[in-house]
Amino acid sequence: MNTNETQNEIPIIISQEELESLKQSLPQVPRSNNKFGLINYQGSWIPESFLARILLIQRHFLARDSDLIITGLPKTGTTWLKSLLFTIVNRTIYPVDQNPLQKNHPQELVCNLENDIYGEAFAYPRPQHLDEIPSPRLFSTHLSYTSLPESITTSNCRLLYICRNPLDVLTSLFHFTISFRKNINNKDLLRYEDLFDDFCAGRSIYGPFFEHVVTYWKMSLEQPEKVLFLKYEDLKDDPKHNLKRVAEFIGMPFTPFEESQSVIDQIIEFCSIGNMKELEVNKSGVINKFFEKKSYFRKGEVGEWRNYFTPLMVEKMTKLMEEKLEGTGLTFKLIP
Ligand code: PAP
Image (cartoon, rainbow, N blue to C red; front, side, top):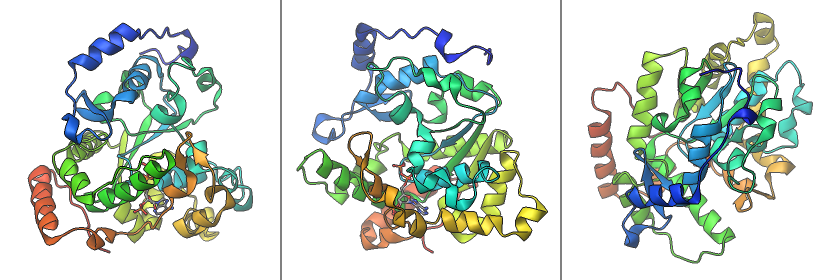
């Protein structure tokens, strides 16, 4: 891959015919369960409407070696990591009170490839501005490792993967979906049990959950300089240690002077959910037409699932975790 090429020189050709015939060939969630219209592309369940933009990303996006890309499944803590990464990268440019996060939602500063950049695929076929963003560019994506564009996997850009215990992910997804449906006036009842069943069957957005997590986990073991694997629960337990890991991974370690000035503690405090929630910018308004900014900052707890899971659900999920994670060395902390 020639990383000197620019985005604008790459032709993008996706015809409606190609798209339709590809769609026809892909597995779909059975209609009775097909609440989101999910189709299976390259092993991942994605909303049908995302296929075009994912093809565009795969064919068009050119990673730079200096790019820093946050990856992870929805509701695993990507918004938090966006705030942290943005603040760590820009810490010498902006003092806390001038941090652009004071005026912008994290998603506006660390754009998601499939939602924010290639979201309006046909309306804006070429996101010209990508070439103009100074390095290091910060992006995020929910794509599975298998679906990442070749330039991401073959260049020296770095991936910061965040995961979270699946029980809290499901609970977070439940609340987010309710809020989203309200905004699009969808009055269908969302049952926790249905979401749980789909999730366990692997039919969750960008899932199967465990395949997504385990593939990135393995890549982080094989190529630790390429993929940093973070856990939401670890960030909660020991934010300082994990912020240092992030800073070292991106080649911007905290200096002894910064440590003596409590810079790490200030970043932790500024990016805490308590503080982010109280910023006016995160209290109202929407992102991508339908997603309320405030819905990205809800409780931010470990173990909230205990209010929703029945003993039977716990048993089923525990078995599934054991089966899917066996031999990987990967574990999840379920309670604080
Ligand atoms: P996304 O994939 O749709 O962007 P994502 O940011 O990954 O969502 O996850 C949202 C979760 O992270 C929410 O969890 P909850 O529903 O269990 O509360 C949200 O509250 C939590 N979150 C957002 N910001 C922070 C933060 N600064 N600290 C801790 N948790 C956070």
